[in-house]
Image 1 (cartoon, rainbow, N blue to C red):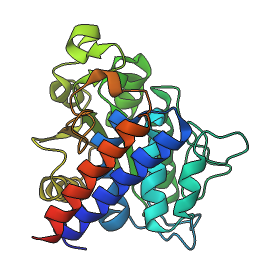
Image 2: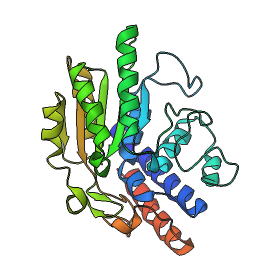
Image 3: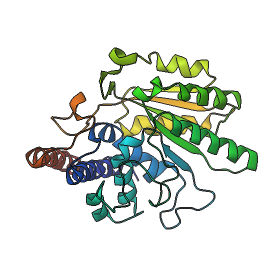
Image 4: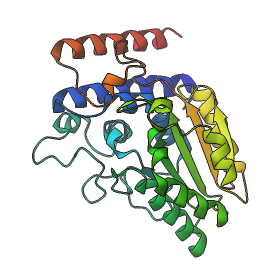
Length: 279
């Protein structure tokens, strides 16, 4: 899939995110939208996966450490064919298998239940170690929020991964600059993020625009080629990307659009889609 097709798919993922959160009347659209491009390139280009065989032993693993952005993960899984797209409108509904946080027991394609911040990266490190001990070829990817880096457990996991030279591990930080209480530097600044991971013996790749497919593709390629140490990709993104009134607005970290806002959001994304079709 070329970059234009990936962009078109990411735009569909964004429509799915907004639709699911609107139907749920709750959820986390901001960080799901900022990571939509990353979700798309992982599931449609980068990872060795098969929706027809979600548990195949040699599949690459993905752990959504910032589990509250489940609408983003569910949307890309649906677009990739793991389950029907129409099920996205059951998000957070009583009896739905699409809960507010990823559940590996009930959702095809989810490799780890997550939601308690800081714990996902630890699970990913364990998976990467397991692959090394068993001489398995699969790679492990995990996505963290930049606010999540304020959790001490993140750095315990990073210390272990660096010490064990887990070069089959890729830690990705969605650096959109905002968390639930405001700007990350105002709440409890994790900066400089790159220098911290370097100190824990990671190969660090800074991505200037984490909403750009070419830049993401180059970073993931560099990570694949890095041997002898784990990789951290720190990608700068726009929170709420693609929806005019959500972009860079901390208020859209964790609330759902009403009917009027939903109509505006979908119109924004339809316009993006039309522009992509003209390229």
